[in-house]
Image 1: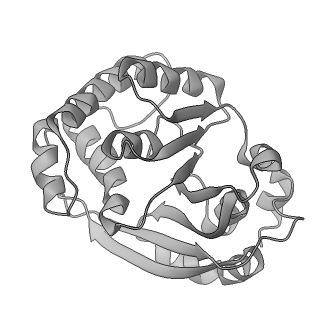
Image 2: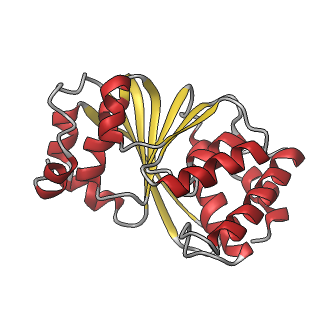
Length: 232
């Protein structure tokens, strides 16, 4: 997929990208490729693959019409999906949570270059950030960070009651959701919607929309070492 094809393909899913947004995605790609030669940002290096496997893939959850308000992207990395969402949805108040300093420098460079407003980069782990930001987000997302049992404990405590946790997954999503039933019950979320779709190349994509129905008990999240060693 060429970057110039992105608006037409997105329109088929109900996502409208302006000419300015397309230009911003093009510049974002240039910066990603340039910086990727200096620090490890992505294994996907070809422009057409970046357009499809990063940009289009990250845009798919927006077609649900469910994402709004103050939004956090946990483990944002090179900005997927948080930075992509911000370009396509300037109305979102976005926080990119990324523990690696060099990646934060890259994110801030893109934000300045694209003149984005209402977006902040936080150089912290989510389990530390939650101390001051507990249950303060309308939407929290994460892509390619961890198994859902681990990921839920890192993300759900940030979601306000009534808000959404949107983990972006591949074909393993349903199995992970089944295995994470206990974690979801403990943390206070339930599956509201399962978005099953695919990339133009046919690769399956499954995005989960988990609604926060109860406050997360204060003892969560635990220390990351314990979360990883003894997932809920």
